[in-house]
Image (cartoon, rainbow, N blue to C red):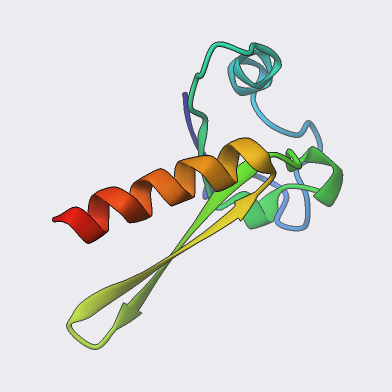
Length: 88
């Protein structure tokens, strides 16, 4: 599920939190991925504690990507991504 909050009406925390389909996906435990762009527009209470944050930043002619794991499942996922990257 993809949510782009760039065009949200409220800048400092959305009045209604995540869109309904994203909330429903987060409630399921079937390995679904919810990608939220501009998540900083969410109220702190609407950000799930178990997540993998991806921060992208422009650096001259390149991009810098930083991944931050929060929770055990996200930590395992980040470790698996690191192993795949190291093997490449």
